[in-house]
Amino acid sequence: MRRATLGLVTAAGLLAVAGCSPVPAGAEDAAAVACPEGSDCFDPIQPVGDGGELSMDMGNFFFDNIQGTPVTGDVTVTVTNVSDAYHNAEFLGAAEGSGIPEADGGETGDDVVKLFPGEYTVICNVPGHRAAGMETTVTVYATQEEADAAAAELGEMPEEGSDPTESDVEQDTDASDDDSDA
Image (tube, rainbow, N blue to C red; front, side, top):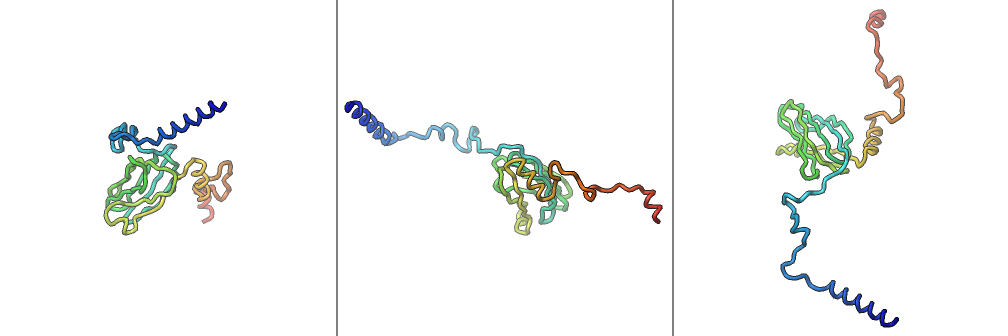
C-alpha cells in the first residue's frame, strides 16, 4: 500500500513539473494562428435575437418621434429626414458590421444595426452636428417580454388582455347628427 501511495505522489509531482516547463522558442498560440483578428475567417461576436424595428425623425440638430422597442439582434432602423440637409443616425457601440441609417433632406432611409441589450447613444456623425445637439438615447431590450413591458409602461401599447375603455375609442359621429344641432 505504501508503494502505491508513493507511486501516485511521484507521478503527480512529475506531471506538475512537466506543466511548468518553458514553451519552446517559436511556438505560437494555435487559435491565434488559425484565425487572427482582421482576417477573413475571424467572426466577431454578434447579437442573437429577433431584433425588430425602430423608426425616428431627424432634422437640423435633433432626433424626434422615436417609435419601437427593439430587442437584441438585427434591428431595422428607419429614419425620416424632415430637414433640407443630409443626416444620419449612428449607434455608438453597435456590433461590428452594423449599418448607419441615413437620408438626404426630405427623404427616408433605413439600414440594419446589430445591437446587444443596453442603452445606446445615437448621433449624427456629420461634422459639428453632434456638438450642436444632434444626439439621443435608445434602449435595446434582452427579450420581447422586457420590450413589451417597457412599451406598456410608456403607454405605447395596451396591456395584453385589457379592453379599451370608451375614452380610448375614437367616436364615429354621423355628419347628419352634427347638422341637426345647428
